[in-house]
Structures are given as C-alpha cells and as structure tokens.
Image (cartoon, rainbow, N blue to C red):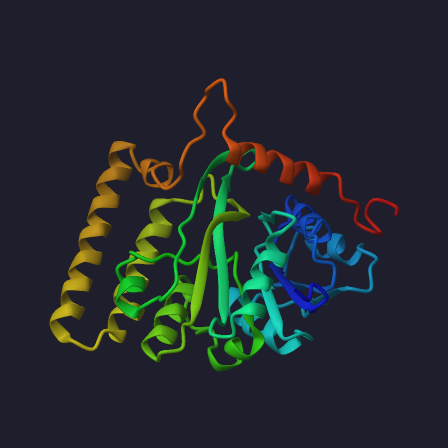
Amino acid sequence: MNHSAPVTICIPFYNAESTLLEAVRSVFAQTHKTWELILIDDGSTDGSLAIAQSISDPRVKVYSDGQNRRLAARLNELVEIAQYDFIARMDADDMMTPDRVQKLLDILLTNEKYDLASCGTYSIRQDGSFNGYRGADEHNYTFNKLLNKSQGFLHAGLIARKSWYQRNRYDESLPVGQDSELWLRAARAGDFRAISLKEPLYLYREEGNVTLQKLIRAYQAEREHHAPLIDKRSKRLKYIAKSVLKTGVVQVMASTGTLDYLLKRRNKKSKQTKVPDPMLEIFNQALDSIYSTKIPGIDHV
C-alpha cells in the first residue's frame, strides 16, 4: 500500500478556542504523515484564529476573511483550496484516532468503486472522556435507506475523493442538515458510492448536543429539503407526516425530561466488569497518543 499518497485534512472552525488544539493534535498524531492541514476560520470572535496562526508547520495553512459564512459555504470553499486528490473532513471540537486517515485512505486507494469512506465513532464528553461508541459496516448505500436512516454515514469522519466534492457541492442555503441533504441528493443521482467501517476511528464530542431546538430544526429540514427529493407523492407525504410526528414526540420528551435518552441509546456503553472493554482500552491508547503529540509553535518544538 502506498502510504505516501497525500491527503488534505480540513478543519473549519468558529469560536473553538477550547477544543481546536486537541483536534489539531490528533492530526499531528496520525500514522499517515503526508498531509496538508487547512484551518479555515468562519469569523471567530474568540481566540481561535490566534491559536491557529500560532502553529508553525509548513503543512498547516490558515485562512480567514473575517466573515461568518456558515459551515456549508466553508466546506465548499475548502474543496477549492485543497491541494490534494483526497480530502479528510473533521470538526474543530472533535478528535480522530491516529490510524483514521491511513485506514480510510487505504480503502479508497484499493477500491476505485468507492468515492467516500467513513467509520464508526467514539462518543466523548465535553472533557474528552469516553461516553460510548457506535458504528456499522455499510456499503451499497441507497437513497431509500439513507432517507429512512437504516443506513448511517458519519459526516465528520469521512475521507472523499476531491473529484466527488467537485461534482457534489453543499447547498449553502441550508442552516442545518447540509450533509444528509447532500448524501440524499447524490444517492438520488446515483453518485453516492460510499463505504463505512464499524470500527470507531473518530472521537465525536456530542454530550449536550441533542437539544429540542436542534432536533426541531433538523426535522424541519427533513420536510423542507429532504422530502422534495422523493419522487412518489404518497411516499413524500408519508415521510412528511412521520417527520411531524417525530417533532411532537421530542417536544413531549423535552417536557418530561427524557430527551437525553435519544443520545444515550445511540451508544454502546462500556460495562464495568473485571475485564476491560477492549474498545475502551483502544480508546485510551488513542488518547494517550494524541495528548503526547507535540505541535510546532504551540509546544515549543
């Protein structure tokens, strides 16, 4: 396997001064070393930009125009800036295991039929500690299975061919749900040749991210942007009705204080037994590797 194939790693950020360095540290910890890192500021008002500009490594490029254009616009911009043919996405408040880039890149290099590769994820708390994990081996993605969520695809954990992004751009008018709308639109056009590994290679900081407001906005996006992609009227109306029902359910759950259950049920919990959960052990090893990695200009190396 050619582990020297170059990869562009992209991290858009907005007011991420408390987590940005952890994300960057996990980039420097990668076993795959041939990369450029693009850090693009979306008009941060905290110290995020100064932190990014303090990194001293020729592989790291920082872009800032002072504007707040939102995530979809920045992701489209990143495709234009990216120097290499493979693009690895990640968010500024997350981390990735040291072998994420290598393993997903290997899939794309050895399987030309795939344009995108993603993985399972560790759910982590705000302090970076283990909260659970989830993932499934998936391939042969279809529009209908993506629509009904019987097939999942982790957006932030993916690596894709730049040529795919050039054919399939994010809809910058959408305030939420940009990724799922793009997957559906590409799948409808027969251009979502993707694979996902069950193995968690991404660390997703999602504690506290499930809120009533976000869920309601997501379900609204389903009705306004996903439903129009459904050709058959009866199926479209059924999908809209289901989305309305889900909105009502989460409103009831929020009023009864059970909304957190939606997040907790997604992740397989580590059982407290005498034998350590192997996934927890691998997670801890990944964190040790990340936290011990030095960043030039930040850690005086």
